[in-house]
Image (cartoon, helix red, strand yellow):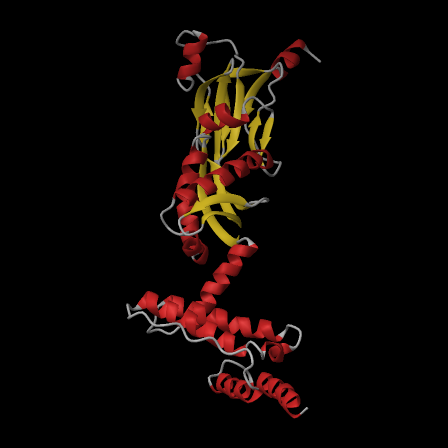
Length: 344
């Protein structure tokens, strides 16, 4: 190999990045001991940015296009090197390429439930999942804050940092929102809107531009989900002309009867205390009515005698059936047991 050929190979005439490896956001041109030839060409493709770094300091940034490297096209670097108007010797400088393409279809989620403050339930723990997309918006910030002088910086590496940032921002956004969490959980677009603004600001501090953000699903703790189901059921069963508490009380009463039927002895097991149960139900109804509409105080009903006859119990049982508080099957089975006791 001639000396001329050897020297020629030490000069870089064209600098470019073909993005052969998928998922790389930042790539350092392999300079080694090579030098950039005066008048060399820098090729920056669409959705790319090239950054010249001199001794750890960003000197120049180039957008898409073909750039001839001279003192006119490298004004900052020329000033750092103290070159004259024209430099004849080749120069060394680290060149980094950044991909500014939108990274789409990225998944996010909360592996562990996060605790947020809610105006309805005070403190709750929730999980959420969804999709987002982003891109390198400011190559200077991305270089100084995240990628640094590595040979390559991948999408997976940056997303490891974004997940923690996303979780913290989500907890802060939802906790500081004036909208109740249950309202946002029912409207996932509203939840995404509450989070996206704060998340975009957090990403921007690292030179990342948030493109899209959505919430695909929200998972509530079991106890909160049970309370929500009760509220929904009460609203469905409540009367439109009464307060919601009336419907909720009726719902609890209706759900209590099947639970009692599952106990030993079924409804017959509560036959002896049936009169007392009716009295308690009346007292609950009066208490709810008193909270809704001011009325004159009423004396509590007299307790049912413990030695109430079986005939009286049958009459009350029939009354419960007529009011639709028990099913025909419960009525028939309980009636049969009471008649068996009566007949012997």
